[in-house]
Length: 106
Image (cartoon, rainbow, N blue to C red):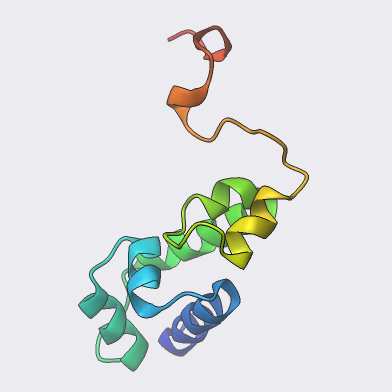
């Protein structure tokens, strides 16, 4: 993927999810300064960062309740509220929230 397309995709994600730059940096797990360099084109995102954005997009589309928990934002925001009201129900979001009898035997 071309760097221009990656920047466009990141910008679209920021707008779509209504994130600010620090929240977007936390979302992809990088320092704010790194994200700013990616967005202004002075540095190119790693291939793993590009792949992570693609995976996060899939999670957003297929599992909005889980995705809502990946975004640092104030409780009660429109995005978090819509995700929680989706048809996903009360899905256990973390391994530790699964009853022990539901976990696969290792």
